[in-house]
Image (tube, rainbow, N blue to C red; front, side, top):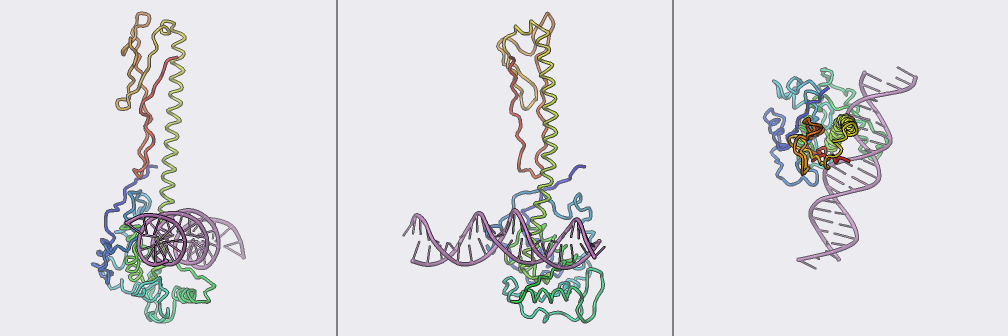
Length: 308
DNA sequence: ACACTCAAAATGATTACATCA
DNA sequence: ATTGATGTAATCATTTTGAGT
């Protein structure tokens, strides 16, 4: 199985997506740009890396365009009821949600459950109850931690954001949280976990690649050993060959051919009246570049074979 | 009912930066 | 102006935990 890899475009500003979202009507209040300088250590553009984003065709065959995201399709109004988690809108002043008022105060009586396509009228659905529990989790007596699954829509939105930027500055985090009706802390954690998953996938890909490299080198080594054996056998069977001056063969890394450094021989040697080519076709190991384009397997600069 | 997987969340360590004496 | 101590914020690695299958 060949892995199709593409390099993520880290040059795209995060706001590209948010602006796009705003175009669809979900990006209200996103006039904050990345140039705010809020990003600290991790807010700089990540290095070019393997694009393991969820919509990469190989890793996840379904392109985003085929995923039905309410706010990205016809009625953008749905975006405003993306209240699956039923959290009150993230606080404008924007800490990690600690400043939220009563968690149930902002809950609409009409909540659309995007996960199963049902709309619940009045009352609290399961998720809503979870949120209530979670909200109490934030209280001083928060001994129990109720966990909720993000909705598909929320996840898709976060994934799209992640495609644009794998890290968020505080304003981006707040904007996302507000859009998705999540706490900034949830957005933060999601990105954290998402980065971890990406890294894990990258590690797996790298591991697979190194395995292939190892196999290639092992095979190459086997071939060279065999070649060496044949040369030694030739040497013992051809006494005149032995009398030739020591010849150093250096492989040109570019043309993969071996040039002799001998002072008396060039490309051929006269052995017993016949022309025996001295040139060896030592091909360098064919190593593929690392999929992420970062690390490079050491290339053989030159192979030297000194006749003994 | 139970085991398993996945992902959300918690926790602690590390690092970069800002501030101040 | 420089330097070291301290605090803060962000991220990462690891672990825990709960929900879904």
